[in-house]
Image (cartoon, rainbow, N blue to C red; front, side):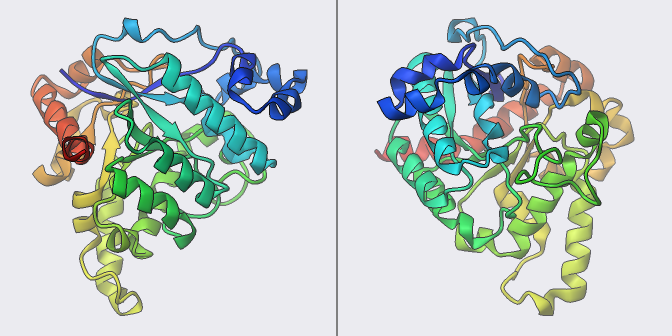
Length: 339
C-alpha cells in the first residue's frame, strides 16, 4: 500500500480555532475580515483566478484507506501575511486542532511552521518532536531562499527529530508582496503562476545545495510536493555542470550536486497527469533518481488517487513508490524505535 505524503485537510470555519488560542488572540481574530477569509484561504492552494471557493468539508480520518500525511493547507498561506506574530498564533492553533481532529491509525500530520520566525518555528518542532502523530514538518516558502542560514534552527530541530520537510506552494507565491516572487516580474493571471510554480522548487533546490545546507545537516530530508517531478533531471544536469565549471567559487560544496539530491531530496508524483507517456521521458532518469519519487495525492483539492497514478505511470510503479515511501519514513521510524 502506498503512503500518501500530501493529503490536505482544512477547518471549515476559523472560529473552531478560537478555543486553542490565548483569549486575547481569539478576540483579535474574531472579526469578519479574518473569519470570512476561510474561503480565500481555501482558494489559494488551487492557484485559481476564482474568488469564491467553499471551504472543504470537515475532514474525517476514518475515510482514509491508505496511510497518509495530512497537511493543514490553510496555514501554508501565512507566507503572504504581513503580521508575522499573528501568523505564529494561527499556525500553533491549527497544528493543535489537526492533532486533536485529523490523526488516526492511518493518518499523521505535517506540523506547520511560521517561516517568518525560524526560532519560534524551531520551538514548535521541538514541542512536537516526540509525538508519534507527527510525520513531517510543512514549510511555507518565503523570499528568503531555503539554503539561507536563517533557516538553520528549523533544520536543526527537524533533523534531530527525524522529520522530513514537506515544501508545497500555497498559491500566494507571485501574487502578494512578502510572498516568494516568480522569475522575471509579477504575472497577472493564475494560469501563468500555476505553470511557473516548479521554479520555486528548482530555485530552492539550488539554494539548499550551493549554500551548503546538506553539509550542515547531512540527515535532513526535503520533499518538494505538488511540483511534479519531470523537471528534476534537467536541473540536476545544470547543477552538476555549473559545479564542475565553477566549483572553485564554492569550495564547501565537496560533492556533485546530484549526490546531494540522491541523499537528501525527494519529489512527488502530483500532478501525475504531467507524467503521461513514461516511454517519452523515463530515459532521463537514472535508476537511483527514480528512488527519490514518492506518491502524493494532493486530495481532495484537484487530487490524484492511487489508481490514477498507477494508470499513468504503469503497474511496475506501485512497488517502486511503496519502496520509496518506506525509505522516506525510515529516519522518523528509527527515532521512534530509539525513543
